[in-house]
Picture 1: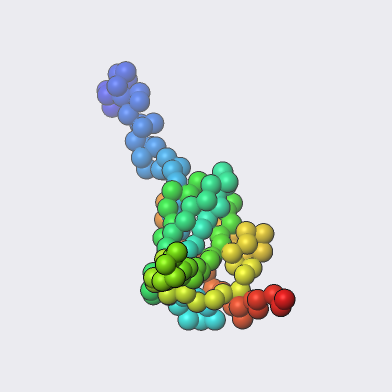
Picture 2 (picture 1 turned 30 degrees about the vertical axis):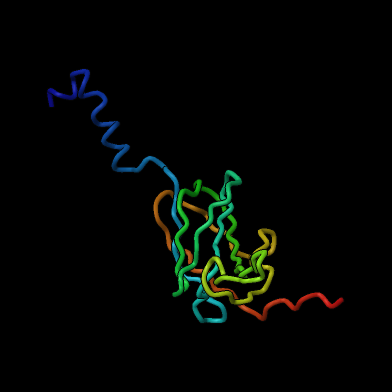
Length: 140
């Protein structure tokens, strides 16, 4: 125990405790996005973190997503799907974020999505179960 009496020994215990507890760094959300129980094969999950930052992550063909570098604290999660848009030549390529599936518009609105999470430092699972029929286009 002689080492704890030396100058070096005085900082060894507090530094070791920090490594055991963690430094409170950013969080990462992972999960599966489903629409009426079926995996959503494309789109974007965006986390609006406690600091107001938008942290996006792409949804893969099996509905899985990963969003990292999220500030710990209360966050809102939104989901959006994106259609392919025609280029100036009139051609349209594939949708930019995987196959397009129309979803209810509320999921892309941070005030209406209904998905909130208390983000912790490290990795945590947060599945997103979307429900309902897509919004109809406004009639003109």
